[in-house]
Amino acid sequence: MKIVNYTELAVKNILNELFENFSAKPNYCDCQLCKSRAAAMALNDLRPRYVTSDAELMAAKASFQSPSENAALVAIVMDAIRKVLNEPKHNFKPLTLE
Ligand SMILES: [Zn+2]
Image (cartoon, rainbow, N blue to C red; front, top):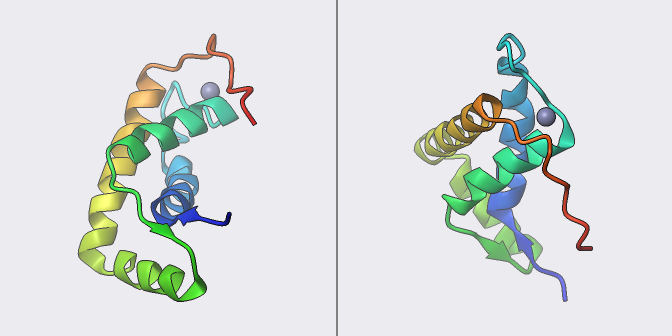
């Protein structure tokens, strides 16, 4: 079974770009745990967009590239990164579930 949540792909791309903007913060950390927590936090606030074909993937991509959609997404991801950096939980063990 091959399904992909396009929202997840979009969030991960935006997150990787945005993390660079936070490098001046005193509590800046881009370890896998902080990045994963920020991605999960943002995705929990967003509607998933599952696709099963290249055509649907292209359609999803096109809709996310509209300026208003993209701005909303960037704002949600930025907010999640800010929250994670303000309260890192480095004592958390990462998921072991495959
Ligand atoms: Zn970290």
